[in-house]
Length: 117
Image 1: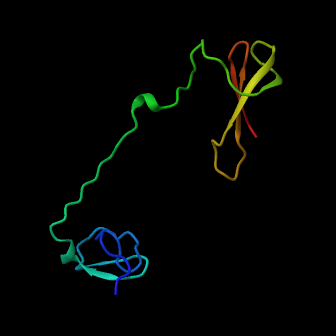
Image 2: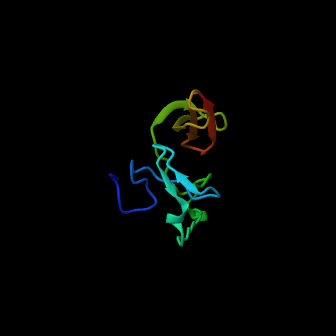
Image 3: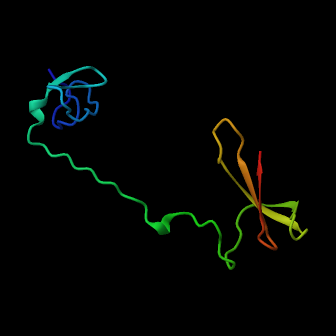
């Protein structure tokens, strides 16, 4: 007797999502190997939609000149204007087993440097 009932997209035995019917006569649950005849899927339509992020939702690489720099300020000398004071933030740009990349932005001239840690 089935434990799960109701939605034919799920295995009635274990509740796992069933794969789409193919050219075989049966659909086999990849988790518990329960077998369902393909005829039970007859008349069903499959619809898929691809949604792309709008262009405005991407992160801007350059901030506006009027925008305020946010983040902790450290005593680091800018290599362009030679003044003290830079804001920093970190990102994991490389693989997980490597260090983070630290981005430094000068609070005076907004020059940006990066350092792989």
